[in-house]
Image 1 (cartoon, each protein chain N blue to C red):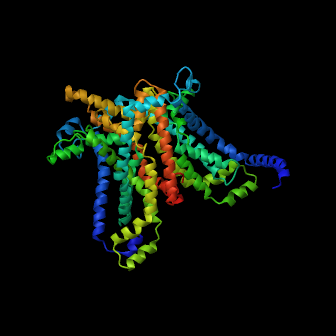
Image 2 (image 1 turned 90 degrees about the vertical axis):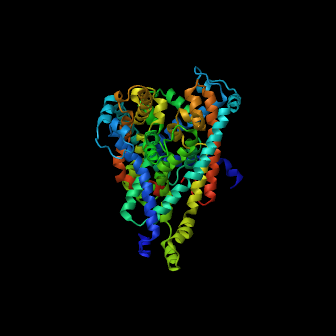
Image 3 (image 1 turned 30 degrees about the vertical axis):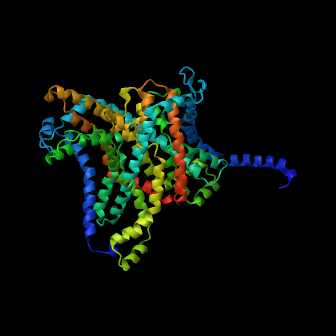
Length: 315
Length: 293
C-alpha cells in the first residue's frame, strides 16, 4: 500500500467496517441478551474481585471502598488453616486422579466387550443414573446405607465384623470421597470413552482375528491404544481442576466429626465467608488467589490437551 | 454386534464380564432399593430386623409424617417455579447466542468469543456474585436463582457446534427471500435441531431441579427453600431428632430415618421416572460433544 493513501484508506476502512456491522445488525441483536447476561453475572463479579485489594466498607460498597494493596494477603498467608486447606485439596485431588480416574476407562472397556444386547442397555441406564442426582440426594443415600444401623453395618454384623463408624471417622473420609465419586460418576464418564471406542475401525479387529489374536489381546493391543489419546486428554483436563472439584460433594458428605479433614480450599472459602464474622475483603482475597491459580492450571491443561491432539477445554 | 460376527462362542471372558458388571450394577442399585425399603418400613421392624431386605408389613407412616411436616410442598413449589422460569430463560439465552456465534463471520466475533471462553477459565466465585445479586435487589427472591444461572458455556458450545453442521445453503436461500436472522433461527434452524435442543433442555432441567447452592446463599427465607434444601434440612433435622430420641423414649418419636428416606424418594422420583426413557438423549449430548472434540 502507498503511504499517501494511508489517511483515506483508514477512513474508507472504518466506513467499510461500519457498513459490515450494519449489514450484520441482526446477529448483534441475537447476541445482546446473552452478552448482557455474561456482563452482569460474570464480568461485573470479576470486577468485584478488586475487593481483594481493598478494605470492604459496607456503607461505601465495592467500588468506593479504600484500596489497601496486599494487606489482605498478609492476613491470608498468615492463616495456617488456609495452607492446610490447600494441602488437603491437592492431596484429595491427587487421590481422585489415582483412584477415580481409571474407573470409567475400565468400565467402558468391559461394557464394550459385553455381548448381551438388551441387558446391556438396562445396565447402562443404571450406571449413568446417579450422575443426574444432586450431591444432596447422593449424600443422603450414602448416609442411609453406611449409618450405624444401615445396610452395610447389618451385613458386617452378620459376618461378625462388628459395627464400623464410616461417616464419623476421619480416616475414612477420603476413601469415602473416592468411593462415592466412583459410584456416582464413573458410569457417565465412561460414555466419552465408549464414544471413542465406537470410532475404531472394525477392520483392525477382523485382521487381528485372522491372525489368531485372543479377545484379551485385541483389547490390550487395539482398543486400549486407540482410545489412549482420549484418555490422555481427559487426564490432562482433570489435572487442570486440581485446585477445585467437589465442593458439592465435600460439603454434603462432611459432618462435625470429620471437620478437621474435610476443609478443602472451597470449604475454607465458604467458612470464612459465611460462618464467621464476615470479612468480605479477606474471603475475596482467598477467592482471587484460587481463581488465578485455577486459571493458570486450566490454561496449561488446555494447551497440554491440544498438544496431545485433543480439542482442549473448549470443544 | 460386530464382535458377534467374529466369534460366536461364549467364552470365559463373557462369564467374567457378566458377573463383574452385574455386581457393579447391584452395588449401584441396592442403595436405591434400600432407600425405598426403609421409607416403607415401620421403626419396629427396622430396629428388630438384622438384615432388612424387604418390609414384612409395609407402611405409609413415613410418607404421612412427611406430608404432615409440610415442608416438602413448599420445596416442590419453589423448585417447579425455578424449573418453569429458569429453563425457558436458559434456552432463549443459549440458542440465540449459539446461533449468532455459529454464523461464519461478523465484525468482532473473535473477541466476543474469546471473552465468553474466558468465563470458563476465570470466575469471581460466589461472593462477588452475591454482592451483584444484592445490588440488583434480588436476594430472597426466586429470580436470584433464575438469573444467576443463565448460560452454561459448555452447553452453548455444544449447540453452536451443532448449528455449524447445518447446510449453509438453506439459510442463504432464506436470506435471499428476505428472511431476517430471528426468522431463520425459529423457522429453519430450530426445527432442524430438535435432537440437540431436546438434549440441552434435559441438561438444563436436571441442573435446575438439582439447584441448591445459589438458593442456599441468596434466599434466606426458609419457606422459599427449593426441594434439595428442604431435603437437606429434613436430613439434618432428623439427625438432631435422632440424637434426642435415643435419650428419650424410642417408641414415641416418629421414625426419623424412614421420613428421611421418604423425602429422598420424593426428591428424586421425577428424575427416576423420566430417566430410563430419556437416557438415550442424555448420552447423545456427550457423544455430540465428544465427536466434535
